[in-house]
Length: 483
Image 1 (tube, rainbow, N blue to C red):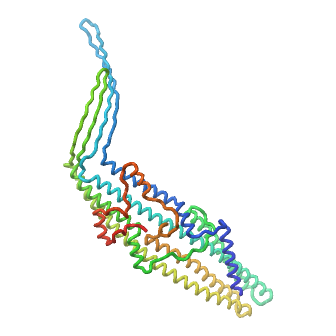
Image 2: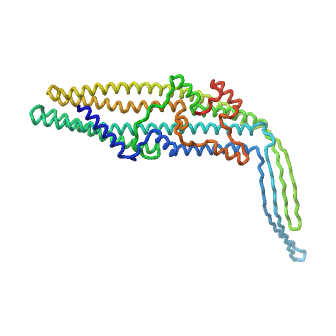
């Protein structure tokens, strides 16, 4: 049957086109995701920002430790005195002196009424927020890689389909011209076939352009051009119901986790601002030596000072009101983030259902259109159908085949988009089997220098603010962990 021959030609063209632009070795979706993770400049940027945020913890801890300064200086002085005598004489007296100063001083806050510890906890929350933000970036990088992978496959298969269509129309044009020469058809049939061939060639050029564009998008997302991409694998493991997906998104999505830490940080900022009314008790010790020619003097001074703001022109109370407003803003932002995650999960769930229905319909459409096309071709050979009827039937079959290409990609993309909205599109959750960036490795170096590190969220004792936030968000204990 000719329809079988057409499908065979299309399959051969797809295979040749797949191998031509890249390496001979097949490349899977997992290979693409691994390459995107390893080559992403965006991930490298946010890892550097996380390391910068880790340094905030060290600086907050250093604010509670003594600051020791060494100061040295040298002074030279020359004094010239002129005195005129009554007899008109002039007496000039010149004196000079030199001295060296050496001093060592230490100053540290003795009592800040808890603001320093709050500052350390604030820095911890910012680090945990940055870690969640890094996971969000990782999800975006992987989802973009999936999208470009599927787009390359779809455009590649479309090119093969369009080339096959051009080949079939060329056959129809030759047949129309033969029938015209034999007097079995009119010039109109030939013109219709010529017009359809030009349209098919134009569509092929557009498809080839889309394929090249998709390769460039792949290069940007993955860090290299695609090789011989194989068809996307079977769908990943998905939740059994929408409610299960919503619950997973609420627990695991990094945007929600990040917003939760920002709320906790805002709570700490408000508490520290209110404690600013208490002032700070500061202690200092200094020792100095002054060396003059022939004499050396030294002194040691120790002092304790308690500074309390009595009047700041309304600045203190304004800062407190500002901290309250920012706290309210962060809490509203958290609720909005939860709502957006829920909306994304529900939307992707619906899109997945629609894509599956479209794929099933396209399969049925291809089967019916293929049968109709074969029947119309057979009838045209006996003169009961025109060339236009054959071309129309072929176009319907082509449209059905194109719909199936993009329906398959839509099912795959909706599946991975659903995982992303649930917070489960990560290297670890997908079991890609490669080493991942250790978010604790950089801060772990601080402990080797005698400084405390940020305790991982899975082992950290929740703060009072965090416990209140958990009650607000109705989260289960331990749900702040990422997959």
